[in-house]
Image 1 (cartoon, rainbow, N blue to C red):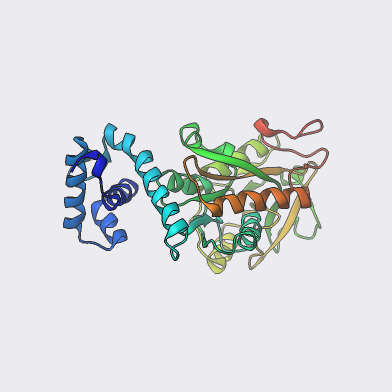
Image 2: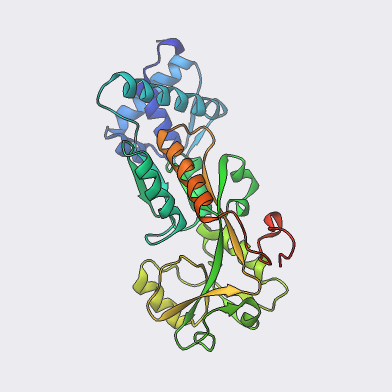
Length: 324
């Protein structure tokens, strides 16, 4: 067998292993024995005349030839999927994995629901990865397809591997314990948080971009970023940890209500989080087309990309005169 005769099945095994960097997990995803996967990788390496992985007892890494093959292999497999969809009569495009950050109301969920209406033939599967920094790394590795968040807060090396499109300037809010002195207000001026320690995911490696946005907003306003707290999963645990620490929590206006707390919009200025949709640069999928169309349509209908006068956004995206 030569490179001209490579079986797409071998490429699929290679891509899955490259995404997992672990032969056992890759074999489980492919529903084959690990020995069979190792044999397929060896056959592919022999056909290409190249070593694709460096294997040690502790880790698996791509070689330079493996890095070079990965986008080419994905392109071949995508073309095969399109061929099957066009002439196979049964199989459609693979499911698209869309991260919504959390299981509740969000801009991302609104976009996803509109996209499902636009492309009912596509399977758009929701995932909940809790933090764009983590989700973006999963996208780059091929384990996710799309996510939403403050993309300009990602590390440059990661951001260059992704494509992005602006979706919304999301107004920010603060979650306050019910007994907090500011809880009785209908809205909370940012300056009223001076002297407070506000939780914004510090110490959570999944939400580095969110913590960075908070630090920029709080700088010069006498507001501290609260120290790391246990990462809570689920409303009950979130409410318990929040009650225990007593710290206000930085959130978006669409963040779901939590037990034992009240959510109040921030004002004077209205702080904004520039939300983008991100995906892998080489991704081609009708579901992605539907998501992009849905985001653009909703932004036009609802004015999502028209920041209010006098609002604040991070320095790279300050929305014009009057920004704080």
